[in-house]
Image: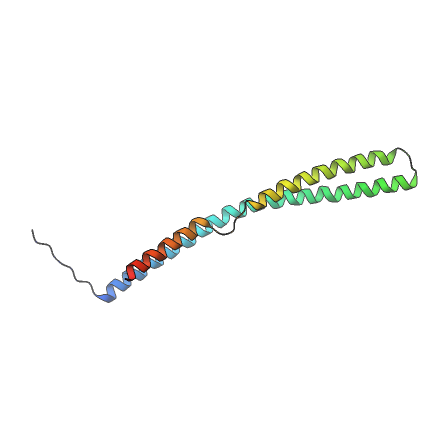
Length: 130
């Protein structure tokens, strides 16, 4: 059996290497876009819960103020009802804030798979350059 040895020019090799590196970079960019989109989805849920918690907090403040008005104006039963409603809204708002903050702690804007892949590609490129 006879094997043909194909000699390639340096320019041809460099052209192939540059083409491969470009393909790798494009793939990394696509991967990064997918990972960032996933993390933004997580962030949206957390922000929505924080906004709902803030809304309930504002409502609680409104009812607290209404209770204070009733207290000062009449010093009778209506303020008790306003204070109970404010307390209930505050508990709900606080719970939503806690859940929303936990959701935001889970968000990572650094795409870990892309970082690992880029590091592997850099090591591969260094090995090819030797």
